[in-house]
Image (cartoon, rainbow, N blue to C red; front, side, top):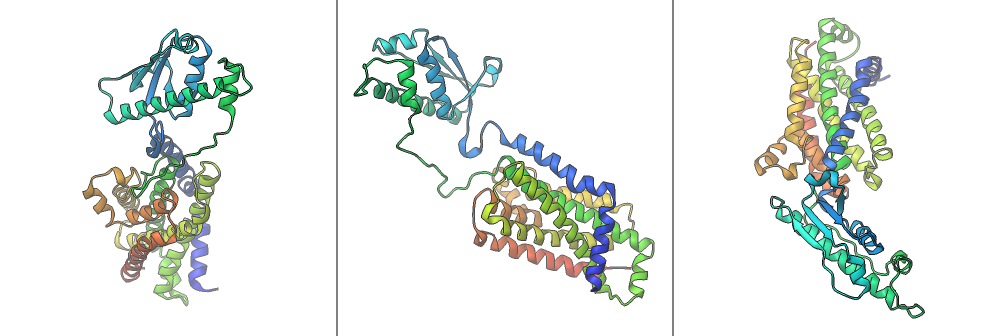
Length: 377
């Protein structure tokens, strides 16, 4: 067997025999994907913001209930009175809401935004309130003008009209400006990039340093194995380890968290494998540069967390200052996440990630050459 493959397969076998490897490969990333995805989800995705609203329904008749259902259908996030403090606006339906409508008299719905509420949130609630009122009036008009009906407004007749399929549909999407990644669409790529970098740095650096201290590297080189083959074998073994983590987290992300991969799955896999090559090369480089193996884990964890934070693994870079967005472009984590967000959150094709892939290949080639030049047995 080729020495490179033999070294890589043996390293993967040794890595997977460690119990700590299973925790850091599978358990910890999964926990962070779940909690960060839940935290970043909020009341609604940034593309469809839903400010919380408190509705005081003083009407006990059917139109009050129907109106609340229409508010929900228009995208209003209604909160209970126990969460009144979180509401940005209050709506109040008068006690005679249904009676006045049945008597064909005008009635008013009180709308009062909180004094410290954001102007944009109040505008969103007011817009959805107007849409709900227009929709309810349309349903009422259609109910009382039925050709075979009695022209009387009843709950059964109104609900029958509302249950009919709407002949007109509206599809809204971003024009030009891309939505900010959120929920599991953000947490899965972010944590996968962070833990891929951390694990390959730590495992790669620690294994190289430990085998150098124990004389394993010198014994391998005493065989018919060249130094370059040994370096490539170490990098190949780390890439195999990264591939195991990639396949596991992508499968869980798709099947459990519903992250859309679809037709972009080959491009997502290619991006992550190229990034794994970069991280593996950096891990072997770290093991060659840091002489004391007891310091490698701390140095690699610190470096990976710093690159993860600045690269956008912890928060969307679209929300960060321009200076921080430029800093992310100096790091492989920033380019990897840019490609993954294009493929997962923005729905772009393979052509949109050619530049990030080219930059990642440049990072990987540089790290690989440095790892081979600095390698010490």
